[in-house]
Length: 467
Ligand SMILES: Nc1ncnc2c1ncn2[C@@H]1O[C@H](COP(=O)(O)OP(=O)(O)O)[C@@H](O)[C@H]1O
Ligand SMILES: [Mg+2]
Image (cartoon, rainbow, N blue to C red; front, side, top):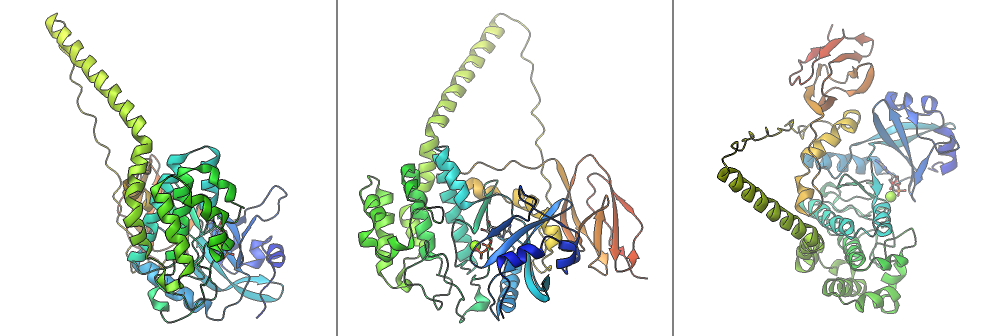
């Protein structure tokens, strides 16, 4: 089947009410550009639009190419991601009848919108601001992301600057068309990833849990080299980090590989020479990324970060010592002159964070509620990124979390203060502190009576919508 061209989707999405079949998308507003036209983000395989409904946002991914088994693949991917419940992914729903374009009814992927910058934008900004710490922190975050994928036997299969988003020191992956999960073992992929990140000999049959090794090495090497010398950004062409497919196809002639080999830094030298060596080997003999990183640079990523912050930490230490000495001296003086005893200030009460339970792993992915609940789940699990040297994400004390909002039967649309917030069951719903909320439910023609959720309320009763 021939799928629509980007301009045909563009035309159609101008009227969400008419083009979408999903009730939430129908009532959403499409993000527009300066000219008032839908803003599109696109790659080779999809046109992606942002739709806003109340406080939450969806990404609608319109497919440009048809693969007969795509719904099957998405089912496998979704079931695996639901089991592992990892923060690196956004929730999504494959809607077989998603959008009407002309007289065709086509599938779409309705996704949770991931805020933030793309990996490429983030690095470009770090380079402009000469923010070496940012690049080093990103390197650590990226290594952890790959570690997490490996832990769950997943290969994203298209790791690149546009498919990794960063927000509040957290990475999110998008673009799951070509992803490998254990349920897809034995199949081939329909795509072989962005050529500026892939092994020059990668074929559709190179599709397994090791597939990310090469792209991960390329990204990690680029970040290590950039952290050493940001002037290397001259090799970026807007569609890569440093390397291009030409560098991989002909590493012996590559100006970039030559320049990296001449850099006076052991990590850059070692990583780039291993990457060049991998280009010449068969895909299957690519070093395992985790060994590559553990052997060389994961430890130095931590040290580098410490190194780059050492001036600040040392100064802080010196200031602390001076202040402590001054306090001791002043107290001694006070004592000696028998002035008022020092007032003992009670320790500040420690702030306890909302400890909302995780969404049960067997719960069906709820696009609507996840768009609002995810940021909070993320914040609560952000200690991982702190470990790799990134700034700790502040704890959120401005919200309270309602752990569960359920109805019998489930599937009812939840309206909080008149705004739709998704369908039941909803988990970990964040609400601003200091307010009470009116909540009501709609299921088919059935409308519940309005109820109140009070500030800090933890238990919300299961609401029966049965006649
Ligand atoms: N769920 C999402 N949230 C936010 N941005 C997204 C989301 N999905 C895709 N995007 C943006 O749209 C771009 C293109 O989408 P993608 O799925 O990568 O399409 P393609 O397969 O054509 O590369 C991405 O690079 C990203 O910037
Ligand atoms: Mg993409």
